[in-house]
Structures are given as structure tokens and as C-alpha cells.
Image 1: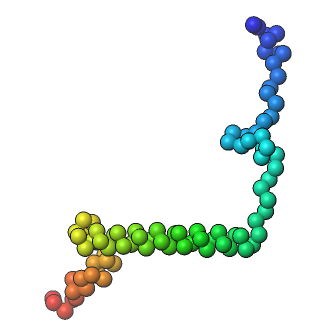
Image 2: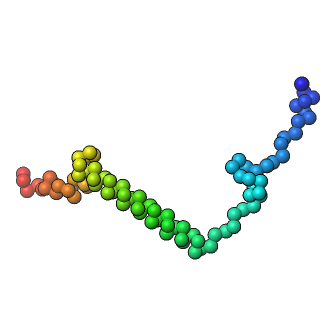
Image 3: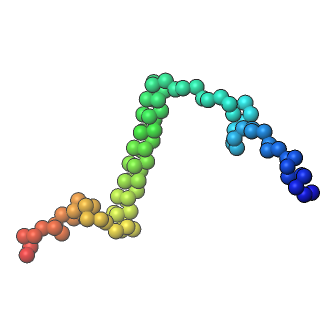
Length: 88
């Protein structure tokens, strides 16, 4: 229980990283082809565009209902008469 026990201990053998199984620990995934990458990229871009369109549609609905405050650009697009200096 003293210095003798500490000197006789060995570190555990290296195993798979956390979250990996023993079968995939030492092997790298196969490289992807350019066609696979382009397919993934197009799918990812389409998902991102759909999310942005949905967020823009929700924001427009919230503005129309008065739930959120408009920024300057949105105010200019929806009520341009506010910026008409001919009134003065």
C-alpha cells in the first residue's frame, strides 16, 4: 500500500477512443469521391436554403401580426412613406 504498489502499476493498454468500437478504432473511413461530395453539398445547401426560407416566412408573418418589431430595412420595404422627406 505504499511506494511499492505505485511502482508496480502499469498504465492500461491503449484501446479504442471513447465512442469507437474496437473494430473501427485503427481504420480510417474510406475516402469519398468528388461525386459523393457534390451530392452531399447540394443536399446540405438545399436544407440550409429551406431553413432560411422558413425563417424568413415566419419573420414576415410575425411582422404582419405585430408580434416583433421591424428593423429599418423592413420598415422601408413595408412603409416607404415614413421616409418621404417631401412632407417637411
